[in-house]
Amino acid sequence: GQNIDQPTEMTATEGAIVQINCTYQTSGFNGLFWYQQHAGEAPTFLSYNVLDGLEEKGRFSSFLSRSKGYSYLLLKELQMKDSASYLCAALDSNYQLIWGAGTKLIIKP
Amino acid sequence: IAGITQAPTSQILAAGRRMTLRCTQDMRHNAMYWYRQDLGLGLRLIHYSNTAGTTGKGEVPDGYSVSRANTDDFPLTLASAVPSQTSVYFCASSETGAEETQYFGPGTRLLVL
Image (cartoon, each protein chain N blue to C red):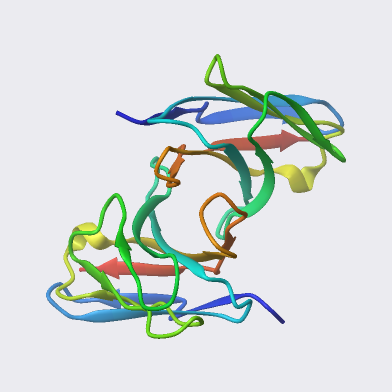
């Protein structure tokens, strides 16, 4: 079966760095997405990786290892507004997205 | 403002009733999607449409139907609602397919009693 695993909840301190991990098992693989979802709101796009390596976009970076079925989202200089759920989603061989349940990130002052 | 709108914002529905959730986008995107989101579970794809006039089944299509008469609109119909269809429903769109960024509507919160 197809599966995405990510931690249910993480806590971090304002100004610090946090890494949210995601492992995936899919029938084929055509890329990995990260979305941010604030409570009560719609998901919004953060990043897309299809090749191995690190992609940096401001305070957020995303890493992919296709051989390990592994990705992480790195958030630097955490701000209170980064409190949200972070959704990992893998694109399978049929070009359908398989979504993880999301990681709820709590930022403490 | 360009984007996706959904209606209603929320609804309480008696079991057995028929309900249509509306979704409209003004970005001229070809692909549209309907998801449900339940606590502790990832987004699950109900139905999708790669272009006007075509639709496909997602992971959890039973009890739901869709139509895509034009590019902008993608309504989702619950023929006879059941309590297990209580959920938050998100409509999304992308330019041509799932390999691209999906843009989500604000969601419809549905409670079936």
